[in-house]
Length: 106
Image (cartoon, rainbow, N blue to C red):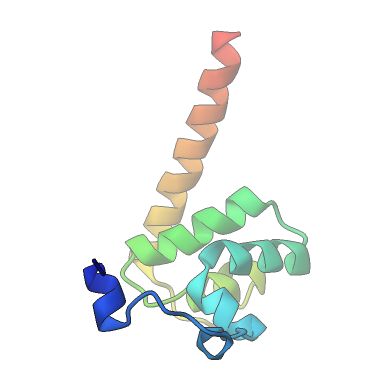
């Protein structure tokens, strides 16, 4: 007896179904890859870059371009996004408090 997947042809993959992504597509799909690349490119801590990307998400921006321009490239001509800046401050404070809390437990 064939399963429903076998009858519909679902689950039958061939080499034609495999697609190699270019680096931009990889970064667009996987934020952690973009974060690693940015951390390396700008010589910044990975965790800080991840917080910046998260701040953009929390601030309602579609991507991390604001963080890249304003925080990594230090381009002050970029119009401020108060929601992102607030989110970044909160995330940095949370990270700092978490690190201090871990040290107190020892």
